Amino acid sequence: MTTTPTPRRLRTRQRLIDHGLDLIERQGYDQTSAAEIARAAGVSEMTFFRHFATKELLVLEDPYDPFLAEGIGDQPRELPPLQRAARGIRSAWRTLPEPEQPEIRRRVRIAARTPALRGAMWRSTGNTEQAIVARLVADGAPAFDARAAASAVIAALVTGLYAWADGEIDTLGAAIERALDVVAGEA
Amino acid sequence: MTTTPTPRRLRTRQRLIDHGLDLIERQGYDQTSAAEIARAAGVSEMTFFRHFATKELLVLEDPYDPFLAEGIGDQPRELPPLQRAARGIRSAWRTLPEPEQPEIRRRVRIAARTPALRGAMWRSTGNTEQAIVARLVADGAPAFDARAAASAVIAALVTGLYAWADGEIDTLGAAIERALDVVAGEA
DNA sequence: GAGATAATGTTAGCCACTAACATTCAACCG
DNA sequence: CGGTTGAATGTTAGTGGCTAACATTATCTC
Image 1 (cartoon, chains in turn orange, green, cyan, purple):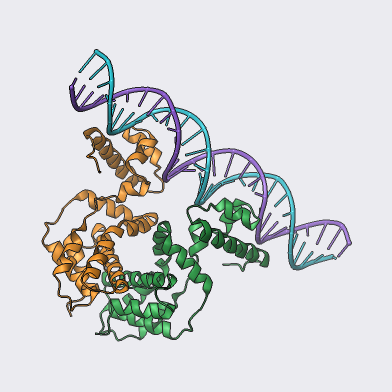
Image 2 (image 1 turned 135 degrees about the vertical axis):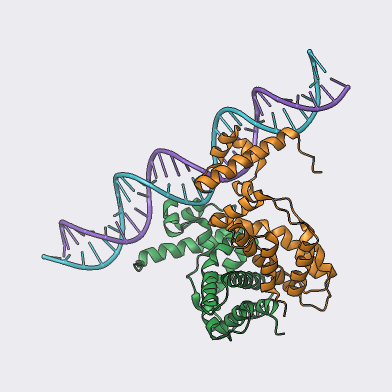
């Protein structure tokens, strides 16, 4: 189905990202047009949109990572959905090395500062949220409770992301732990 | 500061809303242009945007209601922020009569079905969220915890709103109660 | 080196939205 | 009642996000 991209395409894509984040950091998201980014990257405007279906995705697109939902199945089913989701994510995160990608931080910082992107960020977490809902439901949670718990946990996580991007919290891991503490305290 | 709108302006605005929701319900949000709505309401496209700064706001604009945050101050400060927010909102809601406005339900149903509007909904809850954060912080909560708690509670509330609009839960009050139960169970 | 295929370019156009300026409407004043 | 004023609306022109259709250029294979 999904054919692997050619080296040339990957180079073009990376140039668009590099020049795009650069320009946006300097002049702001709204003040930077897709055409301008394309010009800076040495391609046509059309090519920009062939790489990123929307301008938002230049900043927010990330490969879908369902791994966050994977720890949920291990949690005891007696726990309420919110606790299961929070603890599952925490344990999934701990099995992973801190992905110290500075580019992710650039992206999140831009998103945090751009009102137009905050909504888009919400949309871009949709896949992760659905994965969490699916796991909770598979383990017996009512559909409504699963949706409410998943959306609440994701919202807190995004808050943590923003705090990390702003330098308010040092490491991504610490931001996540603290956000999860707030929605499902140690109590 | 804010001058009261003239009767004529109010009539035009209502006609835009009536024809707008009507057309959007029939053909979908993305398939209905602002120009089309304006034409149906018998005004120019420019007038549409003078009443609604963005097309999204035709569906989502609602007077800012800070009342939801008002019950938070009454909660015991020993409780963690998430509990304070959830209980405060619950008690604020209970002091109010169920506002059985069918138009609100139309709007929410459209928002629930339109991916482009889900993000906008998130933005439109920003005022309420800020009010909640302000109250939590005023009562001594750390800023980060307040933001995380407020965003989580709002996210769950929006989930409840959608469920009510879809008919999955009968009354708005029940939807809110249940959403709050999920994020801050009786435990 | 010829062909096939992916990647890009060009052009034209729709829609959301804005700025600038002209026009109509409604209330108020004499 | 006519005239004046300010709000509401209309008109026109333009920008930026985004798409469709078709032409062109790279790159890879044989």
